[in-house]
Amino acid sequence: MEKRPGHFARSVTADPAKPESADLIRKAIKDGAVSVGELKYHLALDSPEMRHIYDVAAELNVPVMMHIQNFPHFPGELPYNTGYDRFDKILRQYPKTNFLGHGDLFWANISADIPTDRGYPSGPVKPRGLTDKWLSDFPNLYADMSANSGNNALSRDPDFSRGFIVRHQDKLIFGSDCSCLDGKGSGVSQNNNPEANRLAGKCVARATLELSKQLTSPGVFHKIAWTNGTRLFRLTFS
Image (cartoon, rainbow, N blue to C red; front, side):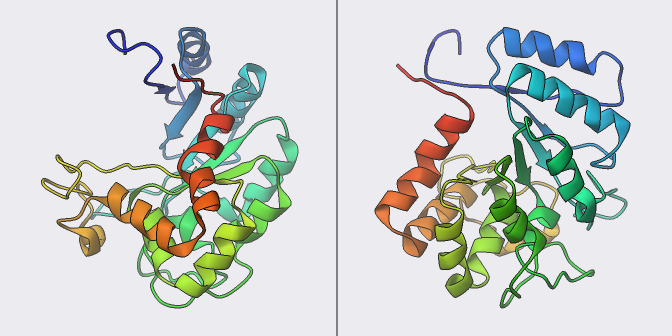
């Protein structure tokens, strides 16, 4: 970042359960970070610790990215940001905080039918899922399309996804979250996540970009891949 000023942006994360988290976030934003997250901790979305972070994000006018997951990727993994069925109350109580949803359970909830035996549902989407509804109802909720979770949600039912993308074309933000080494899938695409082997040997980011192009128009794709993110994070590039 020091060698290429104006070309990169960064985020900041801090454990909400630690008393110094707010000060760490404030300092990072002052030093140039543009967002908070991703927050991936074993806390409830409506816990006092998380609420403190939402207050800080509103104060600093930066978005908060949440990893929302309840099904383990590997034995012994605990849920992150629990209580998603109550998240609408947080969205109402913190109208000045912009939230960016991410993770398995967030994306599973584009459907009203949520299986309990896996993190990445397959097959047709049942209308009126919580995520679909809340993206429409709350101007302060956005959706991060990264990782296997975003790719799986948009690829499982293309007919539904076309309408979903049009409905939320100003709320969807492309992200990569892929650790392949060459942009073509070499190395491990989704570390420590056996359930994500559907994309083994593929670049998750490239697959989601190509999928997005197939599902929508060039104009909407440009919003997803560029405009929405630069607006939410208030980015300017030289």
